[in-house]
Image (cartoon, rainbow, N blue to C red):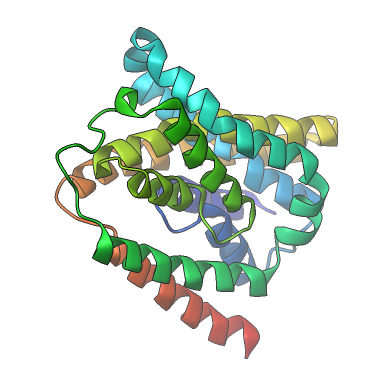
Length: 257
């Protein structure tokens, strides 16, 4: 992987990480388009640059979060299911699931149908949670349980979290913010676990590529987070569901023809 490819993949990560369209799927599909083989380093790169996206959330939300411990209690409770699944199935996730084009495309397609179906049924009501603190511990845990499904590439961590929060009685803006904050322990633990498994055995050139990817993901994620919050204040998620379906069909013809 060269620097230009690292920049492209990092921008794709930053743009897609917090949208309900699956950043992992876009990483895999972009790597295919750029003819980047799915080596162990590339898989580690795709996980590591998520740290850049995490930093964007921390920069934007640290003041609010530090003042409201009740928010972090709910975030950590929601994180538990994914932490358990990630630890138990790390090898299967990295060696079998990530990079599986057929599985990824099916997950994107079915996720698009689910997103559209949910939006057609969902009606935001007055009693729905208007703040993360309004979510119960039980609701938080169930949202995390649904997020755990995102270990399958193409499902989308953000999409699973948002869908789970909406199904369990959160308003759209709350579902999106919960997804942002839940990304911090989820992605941080995934990247840390991968680095420990690799024992930090990267060459100087590989570390340079990783740092470029980190920076690209940070900048692009900052811009997307701000845009997405404005978007959900006036729009629903149907357009993302349609995008997922079109993407799955288009790439299906490209890769599986």
